[in-house]
Length: 71
Image (cartoon, rainbow, N blue to C red; front, side, top):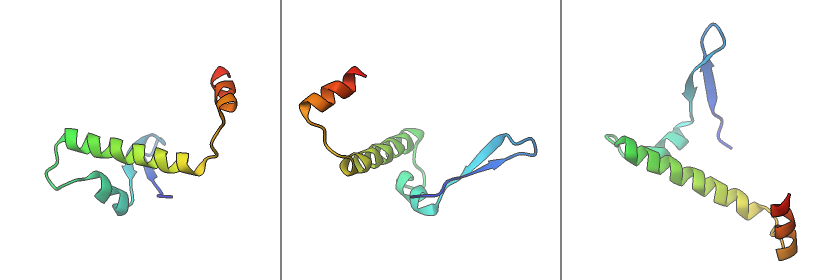
């Protein structure tokens, strides 16, 4: 798991985020990336993380899935 740190001001208000360089390199496709490119990379990263988590979770049968959706 990547450790993300939040920097706060003297009043405790968050003012910045520090992310590990490994994550930074994943979401920054190139040095002069546009906002759209960065947004797409972040979205891709988040979707991939969600898929990784989904692979670790147990599969539900049809009845279990329908029961879950009804809740």
